[in-house]
Length: 228
Image (cartoon, rainbow, N blue to C red; front, side, top):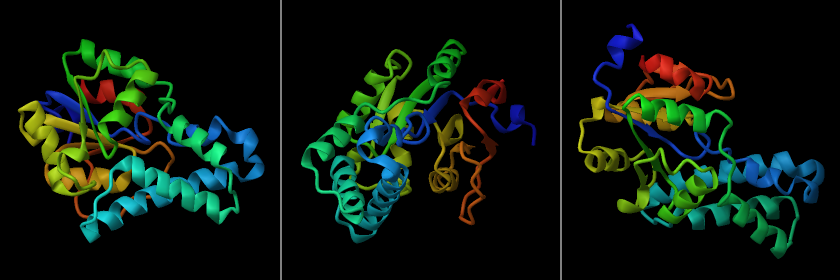
């Protein structure tokens, strides 16, 4: 199906935050010199446990906000590597509030805004975390609304999360193109009813999950042409 047909009637672009707009590994990157050769391993483990904890807490029905989950995941990663450094831990958590956005993000958001699309974020992050990340990247002028899972108290890919954007923007799911670099999130959003573009930044293999992203792109620079 041509992109022009699949994306006909799109009014809004809704973005996942972490890994899609913001580089989750930039927090460790800011303090890489303090971690030496273990920095990449710690960053990957931190991210892996962070996501695992969101899924497990959702299944258990024992929600904690993303700030708490991020702290717990970092503690696990540091403990796994035998690091007990409260000052470093505090600095890494502070760095998570100031993640770098990917280089193309401001340009693409500006193009989409000029093209008449409404832009929003739908994220596991808390409102305070999202506000800090958006402000740090100087993209607040493009984003109409930061939607947080804290409105429903459960993490993605629960359908109640995706409904937040529908209700908040006042448009139908099929009028929203949802973008995520997390394949599981892209599948969840597609199963919910969004038009979905998977931003496969790292050349990951396709998941075997319900729902199927309508398009796959390598980075957000491909999005304006996709939307026509």
